[in-house]
Amino acid sequence: MSLSVLKIKTAKPTEKDFKLADEKGLYLLVKTNGSKYWRLKYRIEGKEKLMALGVYPEVSLSKARERRDSARALVADGIDPMANKRAIKASDQAASTNSFEIVANEWLSKRGKKSKGGDARLTNLLQKDLLPWLGKRPIDKITPVELLEVLRRVEERGAIETAHRAKQYVGLIFRYAVATGRVERDISADLRGALKTTSTTHFASITAPKEVGKLLVAIDQYEGTPAVHAALKLSPLLFCRPGELRHLEWSEVNWEESFIEIPAHKMKMNQPHIIPLCTQALQILKALQPITARSTYVFPSARGASRPLSENGVRTALRNMGYTNEQMTPHGFRALARTLLDEVLEVPVEWIEQQLAHSVKDANGRAYNRTKHLKQRKEMMQRWGDYLDKLKETNR
Image 1 (tube, rainbow, N blue to C red):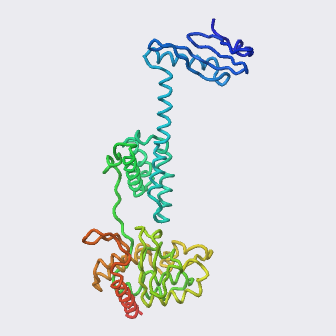
Image 2 (tube, rainbow, N blue to C red):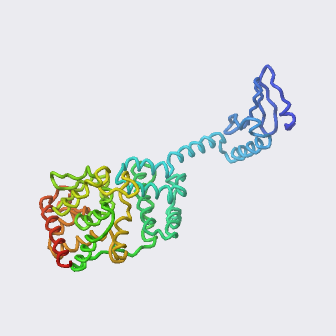
Image 3 (cartoon, rainbow, N blue to C red):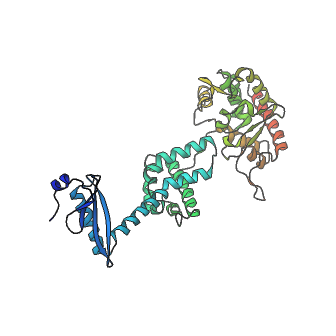
């Protein structure tokens, strides 16, 4: 006779555990403390086994019967339901330690910190564009088609470069997974040519000597805050990246040796960088020091000395001077220096590239070295400062 809900509810504990039988091997075990457990007896390969199906009332009578029927269906196919349950649990546990998110976080910890800005962009890309779709997926189950669908979402909002960057990071994560035995290969390689390409754009810059002279005169005549004016005047003299200039700290200025040394974590290539200071640059810094020395930053924000100059500080000044974004950008001072140092002053390209902090390798394959050609670069920077002064004088 099968069990009823009423019979289960009214079953009271006794001095010994007892069973209330249902059908097809299912029964309810009533313990002396009143707890009630579902059990299933079944035979497989000639052996009788006992399987737990849950606790009443969390598992109702109807639910217990569903679980019994599922287990009996496996037995009919020659599968031990308890062994199958253990295999599924082990698979789930493996998936939880083998998810894309787990592997990505491991890779991040091994990768270590690079530049502050680059680390922030990477974290944002993972959190916004990759982990919501791939995070919980076992990394060895992700297919190239699935990855492409995720990258297409980024692409469809017009962020073509971000989509390519996301694919690059996925490739790095998968290669780490290969190295640690989680996957057999990097599936991102299958998507070569699958994403849209962007036409190469260059930062707008003025490179004609006469126009450069006019720009320098306009910079000298610009009326702005001391920090912005000094940042403007130093942009062509130092020609470092705008972010490196904005975040420059007084502690990084070596007055005795007349150079700036930017630590690795602030640099794009994650290598420390030395900028020799010509007399013109030193003069600008010495004039600014009494004004902003209370701040950590050489160019503090107008909103507070604890923050660096806004990324739009120099750009806005150029706009106020009448230069459009198509004519000149803060980053354009690098192209300005690169062009004139090479084509007019005929400085060896290797010295210029070294000073631009580009990833330059020598004939022996050795990478960037902050002190390489330092003596020549000091002479180059002074010659550059003198040349810019001449351009200004001929255009006043």
